[in-house]
Amino acid sequence: MNIMIHEKAIQKAFAKVVTLKMDIRALADDVKCNRTGGVGMEEIKNVLEGTKTELQVWQYIYDLLEKTEQ
Image (cartoon, helix red, strand yellow):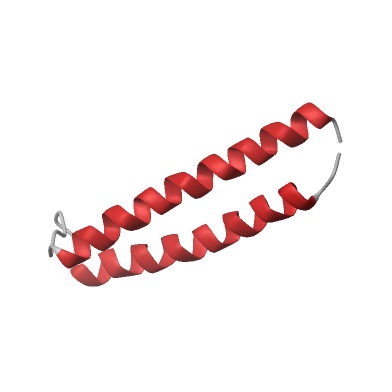
């Protein structure tokens, strides 16, 4: 794999991890403050849990890319 492509993949995975962490904080705050924005609280909680799972996946991808030497 091209070193430049590998570095870009690492950067994109890291950016996704950071974005998901921000999304989780916002969703958790919505739950805490009972802000549902027209959808039910259960849906907000489901989105929060799905986002947490997605974060785990992207963190795993990021970790694998970091460990892979080019």
